[in-house]
Image (cartoon, rainbow, N blue to C red; front, side, top):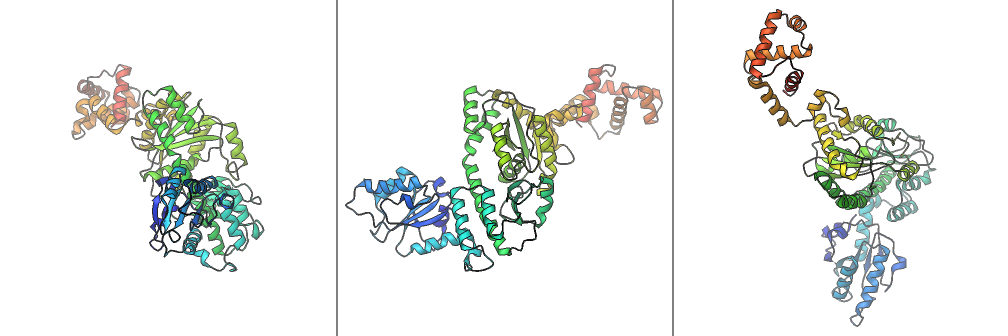
Amino acid sequence: MHVEDLLRLESLDLTLLWGEPLLLAREISGVTATDLEEPGRFLQPGEIVLSGLVWWSAADEEATADRFVAALRSAGTAALLAGEETHGRVPEVLVDACRRHGIALLSVPVHTSFRAITDTVYLRQWGDLSRRPAASSYALPENVRGELSRLLAEGADPATLLTRAVAHLGTPPCYVLSATGRTIARTPTAPALPAAEASRQLASALRVDPEASPYGQWFLHLPGAVEVPPRMLHEIAEVFAQYRQGSLRREAAAQAPARELLALAEAERSAAAPLAAALRACGLPERGPYTVMVMATGAEESTEADALREVLRHLAGHRFVTARLAGGGTAAVIAGVDAEVAEADNTEAGAADSGSPGGSPGGVVAALKGLWPSLRACDEATLPYGGISAPAATPADLNGALVQARYALTAARRAEDPNLTAVDDLTTLEALLSGLPADVRTAFGIHALGPLADGSNPSHRMLLETLDTFLTHNGSWARTAEALHLHVNTVHYRIGRVELLTGRDLARLDHKLDLKAALLCR
């Protein structure tokens, strides 16, 4: 639950006195009611603080309110909810203090009890399942629920959350898996699960967040024969839904530097200093190599970003950032292997268990291509296409790498099946031409073929067939005649007509290549 959610509840009738959008989007980890003048040591990060303002009087100096709010800021408080009953209103000095220290401030009317706010927060956090008595055999024990709430507020990692969530069951093997079979977390008793095997288990796993996109979905999987009440599993899944939402908000907050970096990469001439600064802001190294990848799915922007991030998270040891491109599509800048990141990945539950590749750029391309079928399987209604560049040695090469990735994406979209195409795959004339925009291909074909481009003329269609066969048989008159069941003289006549209409000399290699390219562009 977020601070802004409280404002939307008509039953609470709260009023926003001060708060910027980012502050209102903060997640609420819990609730503390206090009227201490300096409550900092009793507060936990992410909590909202309820105060009747008994500690303040009209005779107090501004410093009193400032000390109180400073304590909230130091504790990481999500928002202050101040009651109007004691003073009839919320003092302006408190509003000013909250503005200075960056703490959202909401006023609580006399007719709204603090108990109503507390119940609203905790019931919303745990959903309808939490309305059951704590002694129910179909719910998490109260002490476990409290511990998980605390761990969430402290920013515990997924493996710790999962282990503590099932500890009272004897810590059975248990996993949290991504939509492509990536292991997000596993208990100490759970063996490593390759991504391909994990993908096959998803059909029987519990969705963590039903509102997530097909590519951003997480699954709770208990493979053993442990008897766990279904409602308890749903409560554990809700814990990870909260964790995932927090992760998404942190990612959203970090998007501004990524957008700036990709905007600089789109510019043909970007100065070295802004590029270096943008890379630092994104947490990427200032030295290459880098690889640029562009994806297009036809889905909405957030879904496309989920798809790109999900497939890239399989790459152990690689830092990356993603952002929407001004010209369409979602792009990523992928840094080379970082030894520290690789070591951290290998210590995370399941990060290296899925066969996550690292190493050379070629290994990255091969790994991503191997993951593409799993990505496609996430959503049959969406067609993911990707293009990936050759390695960019320096930040100044990012623009060229982005151009390559877009070219490769265009080639991928001309394929029959959705795929990932690397610019290094474009090793034939046909593959090279497939990367050209459709209107460029059409224009080239029309101008190179001249009158023959008119497909409505039967005579021209016949000449095009003869030309295609002639070039396919390396300009052999005899083999062309044999393939078309024609006399050699007829082939000579038709090719002569082609040369006349196109202005090309098919005895020349460059003219043969021109017409071959024109045929491929039709």
